[in-house]
Amino acid sequence: MKTVKIRINGEMVSHPVDDRLSLADFVRDHCLLTGTHVGCEQGVCGACTLMLDGKPVRSCITLAVAAEGADVRTVEGYRDAPLMDALRIAFNRRHALQCGFCTPGMLATAHDILSRIDELDRERIRTELGGNFCRCTGYLPIIEAIEDVYAQRAPSAVSKPVVQAAE
Amino acid sequence: MKPAGFTYTRAATLEDALASVASSAAGRVIAGGQSLGPMLNLRVAEPKLLVDVSRLTEFRQASIEGDVLAIGAGVTHAQIEDGEIADVTRGLMRFVARGIAYRAVRNRGTIGGSIAHADPAADWLTTTIALDASIRLSGAAGQRKIKVSDFVRGPLDTAIGDGEIITHVLVPCLSTSACWGHAKYAKKLGDFAQSMAVAVVDPDRRLARIVLGQRAERPTLMRRTSELLAAQGRRPLSIAPRTAIESDLAEAQIDAGDWTMHRAILERAVQDLVA
Image (cartoon, rainbow over the protein chains, first blue to last red):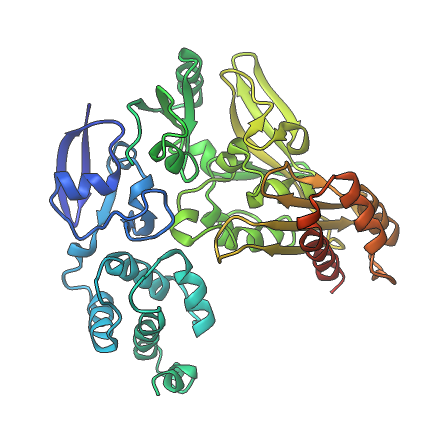
């Protein structure tokens, strides 16, 4: 057992944990932030993706003890975050989720795509989303939701395939 | 699944890490844990001790040493993708980095960890062997250097000694006349490659190598095709090197079922080189 101190959604939390505990189980079981979902537990499905020091990571294959002192943001932690607000509205409008299991990971990845990459097109969004599985939507509504937010962000991009895709 | 129990320790210095690794025969070094993490969860690996080297600052930097770039073993794929370290391979390493798994994995996975893990389908093995790169290891007996091609003995099998840690990947600085070619086939985007080939030709460094990466065998240097590339130098190949490729594939004892796929990937890498 080790006592781990991590800043989660702006708040410093500290819990004694087993060395083998994953960061995903830490936020779910010890911080009761169950928005982070655990799917494959081998880093493939992307459901557990959250932000560690501002970068998306797989929390199922990141040890809680290895995140000591880090700044973690889960899906619950986006208050006053215009980009995440826009993504939520777009996901809602586009019906980009059904069961919602993949959604927290999708939102984390979408947030990263839109804040890291300047020039986006559909192919790039598809490529960047390649590590997040969705079994309900067929991906298209998710891609369209991200395109919508991208179009809002860069007015020059509105006339690109983004609009055609909305037909 | 959840991992079997182990003790985790974070090294503050390289000496600290070496002492910890030497203290337990059942110890493993962990950096990003993007290969070891799944293996722990699946209980394919059950180390008693994990020594985390990911926060050693000297592991996170790269510096030019003569005509090689010494990349710290803890440099992540994302750092290479984003050009945070010098690009001495005329874009090859940045290109390869971008094709490794997914961004969330690239944010933690490291080049040293990838080579230490030695999954034969991993992008860095094929790429660093094509670049004729080496690694530097530290151990109780001091430092040593070894070519990646000699270090990797087989799938998940390396020449790492007890208590040794990879500290740097030594990549040759290609000359301005160098060119490279790349081709990869995976069943799904971001998945491990079923087949992958990297070709590097640098006449000024007398470097001409094409390497085939596969799922279950260590990456293989395609000797005859490499000789052909060396003889051609910078000029485009006048004929498709199919005879040389097929002779290399025969020598590598490639499965009949994979033959066409590997041949196509090797031909594409050669074409990519010329283009």
